[in-house]
Length: 113
Length: 112
Image (cartoon, rainbow over all chains, first blue to last red; front, side, top):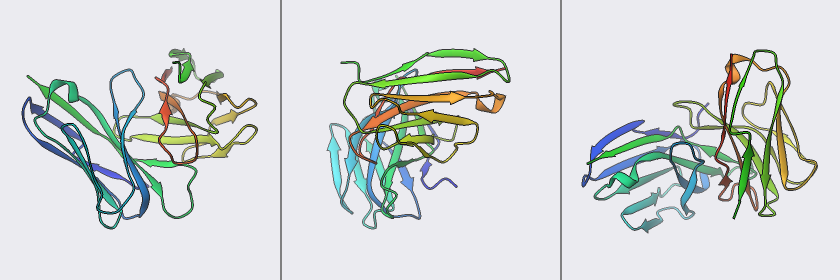
């Protein structure tokens, strides 16, 4: 059972466009992390959100944690080719299984000139 | 700054062969993890360790074994490889459980 569903699965856009990636679950998470993975490399942490309703900005990337801590979104403004990659959300469960993360299914983003 | 190092980077096996994947971290992290990544399925946890000498099963442990004899090393073993184990394997480590994880660059394993 995949606890974290991401949408869309694939996204191909042109440079300068805006986009939003969603990460949804029926479970409550104590925190949620977003990673970006480039071909041939491991995922690299972008941000961690902890509080329901929290919004964090990282240059052109805006991350939001849902009020109920069951979902999250990643918005990219004026996408650039350097944003191309696989975006993964990962949640720390709030039910005591605190030793591990649950990863989402991933969103593969391609930004073309 | 090595971080998390995985060896080998690529390997091709025949069905039934055995092999061990090595993960080494130099950050003195307590927690270490092995994942497999398949298209459209994100990262799935195989086994993990919360400290030297400890191991625990993750989401997809069947067909794999692990050992954590030293704090800095976490080994993943395939006793009798099967084509269904063709995947990219990632090792990760963290200070405490479920905190941001540092990943290696993966091992691409093909089983014929």
